[in-house]
Amino acid sequence: MNFFMLLFISFLGTLSVKCQTINIELKHFPAKDYMYLIMHGDKFDTVARGKMDQAGKTILVFKNKFKNYKGMSRFILNDGSGFDLVVNKETFTVFCNDEVLNADNIKFMKSPENEYLKSQSILKQKLLQKAQLAVDVFALYNETDAVYAPFIKEQEQLDEQYKKLRTANEKNPLYAARMMEIFDFLIGNSNDLQDNRDKKIAQANSFVLTRLNMDDLYTSNYWNDVLNSWLMMQLNQNKDDGTLLVALQQIGIKISDKTQFTAFAELAVRQLAKTGRDNVIDSFGSYVSQSGKIAMPSHNLLTVIGGPQAGMQAPDLLWKSEKYTFDKKQKTVLIFYEAGCNNCDNEINLLIGNYLELQKKGYEVISAASDIDSLESKKYSGRFPWNKKFCDYKGPAGSNFINYGVIGTPTIFVIDEKGIITGRYARIADTHILN
Image (cartoon, rainbow, N blue to C red; front, side, top):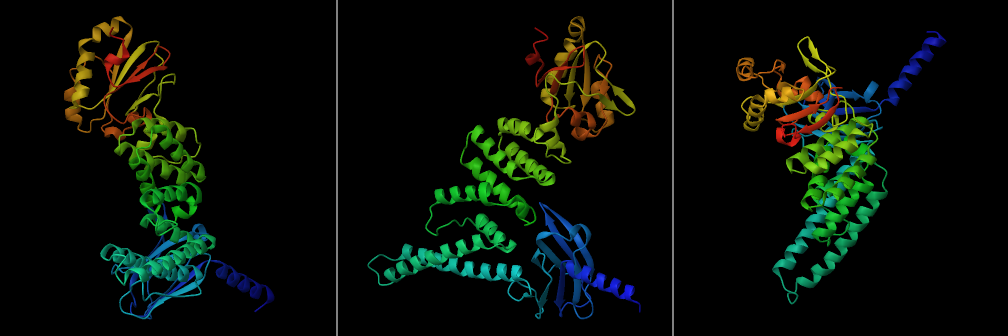
């Protein structure tokens, strides 16, 4: 074997060492199919699928787009059992000698990350159980009882241990330490075991706004849990629209990655819509649309940020191969509706009844439906006196509804003779064109 071949083999060996590698050894699970996943927000990416060998072993190697991954991961066997692992530039071994997998019997070799997460979780759990026992004692006994005084001292010692534990964790650079902080937030732990509810809420809010790293959260498998909990915390405190918007923007500023920012915006809009905070949605939508950090938004988010407003050029209407452009030197009333919607019926009937009057004033009427059933749609629109009736039978996910940012029906646009939108309304009466 010549020198260059030896050099090449040496290079390949060095390359494999640099990849994150996990050795799995589960001797009671030979020939089992498995799947290995990593987390991104509320989604899972599959790193590997395979079958354990006859000794119950396999090797997982992080290559290509996964090679620099840092975060939580999940190893799942086809019988449903499995475990979560921290991944952070370590080559290590996971093994279990028992027939049933659980958190207690999973062992690690050469993984400070996973060893820390396991040991600290056990330590904190025991400490919190002791603290709860002290609380129970104080609820059952009086100061005159012999057991009371020793538990006062025990509680003081537990408080000190708890503070030292949290302080040491904050200084620890491991990703596992960040996971401990995320667990604390979700469980409701704060800086002091004796903190009341208001202090816990204040510290939890401060943690998310100032300390929490959004990259770490995105790969933690708790993206939705943390952000939903934080947002509900804001909403339950009945914060005014301005204060809530500022808090949302503070989170947005912390996120530089477009995919993460879009995921956050989607989540925020969903929660705000559920709780009826429409004013905040409008303001937040403006902030998001100007952020320059949106990537592949959903229909709902697109409608919040991309719906054309007064002063903007009206987008073309599309249906099959037909395209309608608003450059006809004619004013237009464009109504988005759904057949069978009561409010839509009211506005449609007003347009039908006043169609001749609208024509005298220089307006043409165009309709776009979110119907799916073509027969019902054609039957409903057959009574319209105007000619342009658009429907692609895709419901609210149709291109016209998306392009115009229409979430609910009816939605009415008034467009001038130059194709510029002069107003967006929910009722004909609000347009004042029939006055």
